[in-house]
Image (tube, rainbow, N blue to C red; front, side, top):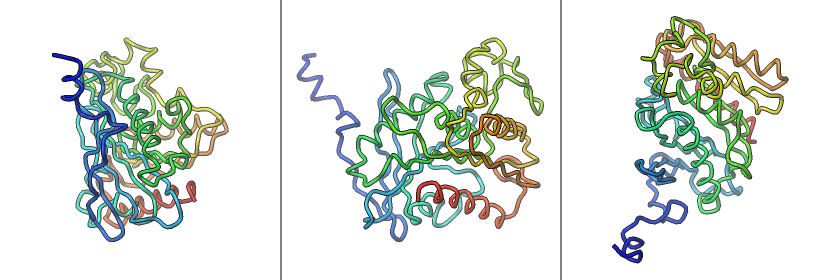
Amino acid sequence: MSAALRALIAAPAPEAAPLPPAAHCAPGVRLLRGVPYAVPAGARPLELDLWLPEEPAGGPVPLVLYVHGGAWRIGRRDDMGMRLRDWEPGPFARIAAAGIAVACADYRLSGEAHFPALLDDLRAALRWLALRAGELGIDTARTVVWGESAGGHLASLLALTGPSPGQPAPAGAVIWYGPSDLTTARGGWDPHDAATPEAALLGAAPATVPDLARAASPVTHAHADAPPFLLVHGDRDTMVAGGHSHALAARLEAAGAPVDLWTVPGADHGWYGVSDEQVTEIFTRSLAFVERLVS
């Protein structure tokens, strides 16, 4: 095959490909679905969905980069957890209606690639968003990362270790019941067990790859210049022990970084076990935290 034909067959590079037409999914909100942002070698194209405020009048709008959960091995980029799936309008449309764009990004799952590939994908998403910021009307210097469960783990790492060189660091992080330490036994989880989601993420039982497990642990990366964190965790979480958020909060506080830890009484993983009103309060307070950081 000639180089010219190969170039014609190949899809346009994500940084230059035309943006899809926007749908109007809620009053004052535009939605761009399935926008390719990266094509890792040997892997499927990675896409993101964009919820954008309708024709903002005050210049570029701030951004939430949302990272989905699913134990690093399953999950959909547009899912904020089981308790918010039936909301109408949905949580991302509500954020956009508040004047903040939302990008929900794919990342390679643990069956496709091991850590740190998943984190590299999120950095690639931030690079793409920065490159296309003018077309999208967003201000990536005012980006808050928001993740739940495994997505909270990745969002924490992104906030603590930074994006690609030359890009602005996230302005803050909202973390819902995210793992923070892949080295310490908690809540029945054993770092020597090779059959856990954490082992699938790393490619081996965490205890057998201690350097990699530490590198993949947000607690390892706490530092004084970390952006403000909001950590929200149920006190009855049976999947990710609440000690993960307590440990990360303690490390951030010890480093002198701003952190707010909110323990939700009676809440299991995914906010199971609490009322609809409490779930709404958790979302509303999380959004208010974002608004304070980017206003």
